[in-house]
Every structure is written in C-alpha cells, then in structure tokens.
Length: 293
Image (cartoon, rainbow, N blue to C red; front, side):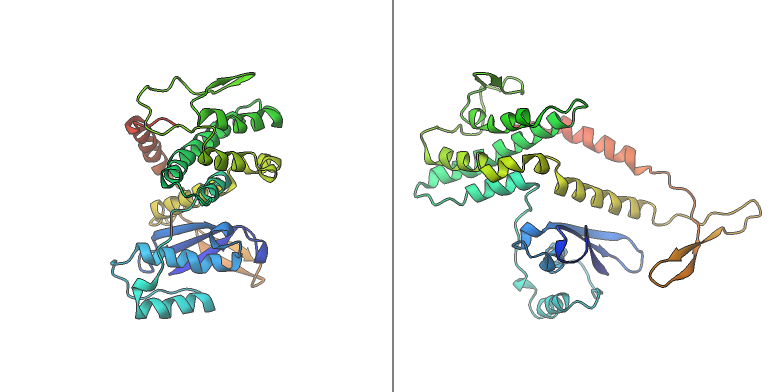
C-alpha cells in the first residue's frame, strides 16, 4: 500500500515523501523523497516518479498487489509495469541539495576534452560536498556570522580546488591534507575550472545563498526517514491499561468528517532505536577513511 505526502498542498509543493507499507503487518518497507527539481519543476509528477523509483528498487521482491489512491498517473504506471517491468526507468541518485544540483549542471558543460569533463565530475562534486559541509558547520554555530562571511567561505572553494588553502584575507578551515590526496586538483587556466567558477559565482545563487544553506531538502529527507524508523519500531506497541486492567481509550475530533473518532491508547514509546542510530553513526564515522574533501 503506497501514498505520497507533500510538504505543502497543490502546485506549490516542493518536496514529496512516498511511503510503501506492507498491508498485513503495517510496516513501512520503503520510502522515496523527491524535490520538484527531480521532475523538471513539475510538482504534480513527483508522486508518479517516487513510485517508479520504489518499484524499481523492490523488483524481485514478492508482491501480490500494489494499492494506492485513485491517481491516473499511478494507474498508468501499474498497467505499464505489469506488462513490462523493465520499462521502468533507472533514475540517478538524487542530489542532496541545490549546491550539488548546480555542480551537476556544471558537469554538463560542452567539452571536447573527456579528461577535463571527468575531472570536473569527480573533483567538482567532492569540492561542492566539502563546501556545503563546511557551510553547514559554520552556520550551525551559536554565533551565526554575517552573510558576507558565509559567502566568502563559499567562494573560497575556488581556491581550495586549486590546492590553494591560504589566500589574502582568508584560508580554508580544514586540517592539513595528506600528501597522497586522491582527487585531482584544478588548473585555473583549464576549461573545467572555468565551468566550476561559472557555477560558484553565479549571481542568482549567491543572492539566494542564505536560503539554500538551510539544507531544506536534506532535513526534510532525514525527518521522513526517522518517521519511518519510528513507525516500524513502535508498530506493535501493546494497548495501555488502567489500574483495573481495562484498555484505555480516547477520542479525537476529525476535522474532515466533523465527528469524533474513538481511538485505543497505546503504551508510551521508549525510542530505543535512538541509541542504535547513535552507535551506527559513530561506527560509520570511525570506519570512514575519507576526509570531508
């Protein structure tokens, strides 16, 4: 059973989270988070694309039927996938924020030099990842600096990718890099650097930097994944009882039906999965041999 949830109603929606649930147990088996940039800025297509991506991932898993709402676009997918599952397109991993999206656009620049293009894709994406991580730490501090300082940190990427970590008035914040740095450095005279420079110094991007550094899609995606984890972990909670061992019930007003709904109260959540997540986070960080660059 699947359904999508947008962050706002109608054509103004920017993000969508699609949940696929196993009907018998009630467990969420997969979810997909999309931004309207993933569907050419057409938010009405996000639900269709999200279900396509999920169905492609669970290919081979025993599926009796897929139940969704009465959506014409979803119905078209199911009819097509039943006839030929292979027709469902392969979609690339989603870019985690607008900076990565801009860097991907830069890698599509026309270039006759294949080596330069590959360098742009490899080194450019890593540089943008470093830049967004650096800005997230920078702006997450209690004493948030002024916007010009954050903008300077972002533009400083143009020095970092050229292996220039100290320049007049500024410097990189990272620790000293190892000598066997695996990523290729940029040459300021090369066309790949010109393409990256065009993206980083884009006036529209710099003007809207204050909005983008909030990582809206990343936070939205993380919240939805935590929601699914919380749902599955507490899915089988027993009913709460009172001192007389009777099941506790409550009522809740339904705005849509204009009536009261009776609901059984469950025992309180213990959120035991939080410690598991924290342990996994530390384990991943310990096992990570790559630096933020």
